Image (tube, rainbow, N blue to C red; front, side):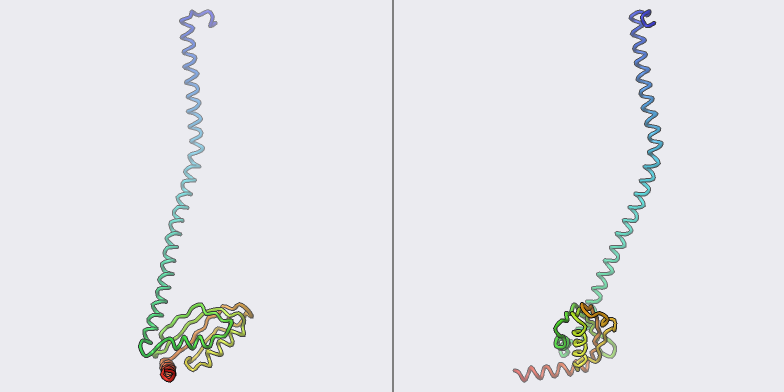
Length: 197
């Protein structure tokens, strides 16, 4: 039937056919885009909502971590400040080195001291909180006995749970020191120093 048309009419029909093919193709592409967006957009919005929730949780955790680090730092600063204030009590005539010498002289082999905190107490007394590790229980018992035998210390308190393990013991103890005891120790140590000089 196409052969019955003139050349000019045939060209018009071909052009019209091509236009219809292009329009049909574009319409098909548009339909695919619309159908795809209908299925993809809900997934996108759900994913974006979950991303927003995770982002908020991440910000909240970062904030909480920053607050905890700040409070931990302020706690350390507070402990250092308390130690400094406790040491200020013993300025000039009251030297804390006498306490340290008493602790070191009572320490047997197998005891490692990690840290200690000087804290002023009531009635001008001082408390020394000390922590460390002991290789064996026997060393810890000797350390406590040596501290008890030292007249500079009024009392030595170690929790019973620290004696539960036989080896590699993490311990903490509290030494109660009174000002009168420190004065006696300092006076006797200064007398020894004068005799040696």
